[in-house]
Image (cartoon, rainbow, N blue to C red; front, side, top):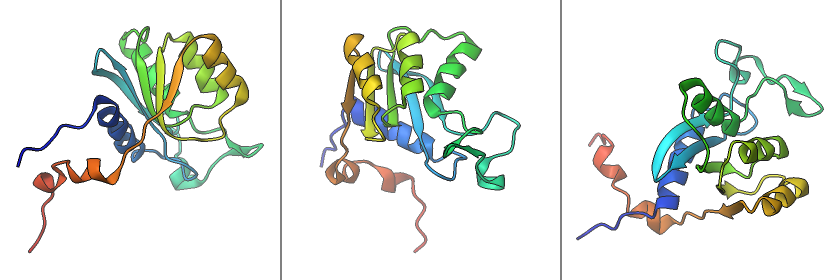
Length: 161
């Protein structure tokens, strides 16, 4: 039986979900993938500055119910591009959660042309207003069980019998 390939949006959003599994935040795991011309240019997950303590190990550093230790996944992906000299202009971001206001502003300044996300997360009205004003579409990507059933995961799993 011929297997169908998954659509591009689900392909990249599944990568963002996998990347979120590297998160070092105890409160929420978030992953982001920056894509240009259907090619991944950078990835990021939420976690501490490289070399600093991780929330998983020492707890969150909370100020006003926000962890100050954590760099957001979107920012880590953008910073990876800055570090390695990759332009973000015209890229699309696939992220597990709707970006916060600060990340939305950063993504707009970086030239991101579309935001694709899985979960709604305290969607900020001003962030949504900015996206409209800049004509950057934020689209929720849905993944259903049937798409997972068509993936060849079993081919890569070692199952002891």
